[in-house]
Image (cartoon, rainbow, N blue to C red; front, side, top):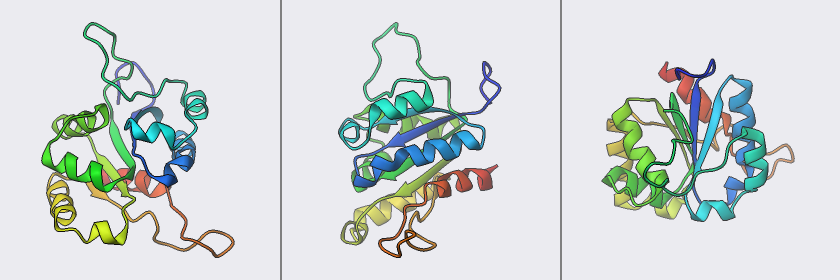
Length: 177
């Protein structure tokens, strides 16, 4: 747990996928489970969700760019990290150790910090079939990263498209404890 807070601190890394518009569901669920939250978004993801609403809900500015030398750290060290939705691009770059955005740098560093990491991929079947993606999943699994299927377990209330179950990421963290 963070030294300065009574609640554990969760980094939520958001990637550019349409479902990111609903990331508030994850934030609410995490807060209900006692987490303080800091959101880190890929630069493109900022266009996929209501940043003002997320900032109001967390009480913190969303981070998307590196801070300048000498600037204070805006978030404490994480007690855990959730990546949701996780895109093909982010998963592959992360597994390769590429750190060209704050989000990727944070994920690469989180492994070295030894904090639990849960991932809910949002990748089409065609991209998921790519051998680089499969190899990236194997590498990240070998690093202890926990993956969940956000679409398992049914459809929306109207019986339409499968529902993205944000809470699965939190369940993965609970099982890591």
